[in-house]
Image (cartoon, rainbow over the protein chains, first blue to last red):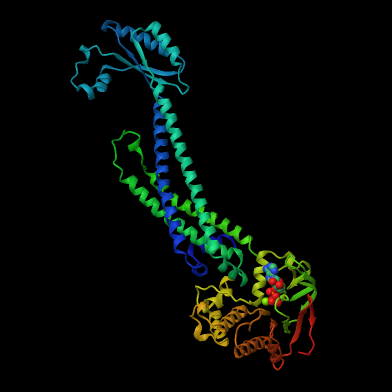
Length: 300
Length: 225
Ligand SMILES: Nc1ncnc2c1ncn2[C@@H]1O[C@H](COP(=O)(O)OP(=O)(O)O)[C@@H](O)[C@H]1O
Ligand SMILES: [Mg+2]
């Protein structure tokens, strides 16, 4: 019999093969529950890794661009110092471009705090210079020293300073999420192996009768494999659905909300949830199959 | 079909059987007798490959049991119908499905087979018990259900281990009659029994040879029963 045929009969279902093993309510319910609980946990681990992945990517993308130079100087010196700063920046390796913000742009940045009618020209507002880095970035300490010498009123705001560790933390969080998913998968495999072993032991008389009348190992195994696969599938499906609902109902935050409220699925992320019951079923299929083969090979 | 060549068997202690040779001819009818504990069940197990001899050779349908895989063994059990001493069933399935089980597990369940099943059940006198569960059956009914299950695959050989072990005389005669009928249909029959009366009563219906296990050897018994 080909593998394909066996797999299709597993899915379509051989009601008769299923009937040869008596139904066992208790292990069935335990397996369903465990698969459901594990799937529920997987939803959160998955949400965690997807969210931290998004966060890391966003911070990483922003990192590529910006740092800011702030020039505070007496009004008559601002122009000269800005020109000097731009000259320094242009000759700094690792700086892709540098640009002094116009008065309108500065007003636009301040408007959220002080309103649109801010008389910007009459206030001692520092001049901002936007620095775009190259991929390699520049030597922050070196640039500070040069600016100190040539542009006394300049302060360099290096965003990478605090963003880079955050990005690393987010990437680590994603890794932890993925490791958790792996562990949950291994735990469900272990759990199903135990349950299958218990079922095989409880049905040793059935198995020996089947052997005596000429049933081949794969026939006997399939009765158990089918059962546990379907239980894992349906249990994980319910667990995933409940987990997804919990995430869906989580209070949503504004666009740039904090990390916690960013925990969720976006677009295609929701479809990745469908993988949970499928993977649970595949894990159950192989775990039960190997448990059954091991048990059967020890019988005469 | 079943060939034992100079075999010996031991469960680990002393030898239970030694120097045993036998070739079952197609269509023959054999009794196997001997006192309880002499090794009749062991001998039958060697005949259908459930045990491998400690020395010597057993060939089933031309295959050496030592070279047979687990699946090969499953296949020979479809060619050799066995009525076990303690006939066991799947207690959660009705008699009808238990008898049809060999067809089910071999994927040969067809509509045609289902009408055969009905005939077979009424042949062994269990037509009215088709939907009963095995634990509800009497000893004789269990034996007949086991016989029906053993022959549903139309095996060439039927081995029966004490088929009349715990049934009354009338029932044992009925079972014997069924086995004789199978032999008339061309099947090779080997019945293990310690009941000499059963063997004597068979002589009127069939030409049977009697094998006796005595002193670890297999002997052809004469007509002196
Ligand atoms: N699985 C076994 N392990 C060890 N000894 C066994 C086993 N089965 C049977 N025996 C012993 O082998 C001897 C023959 O048993 P058996 O073949 O059942 O005899 P019979 O069927 O003629 O009564 C008995 O002494 C029995 O105790
Ligand atoms: Mg016996």
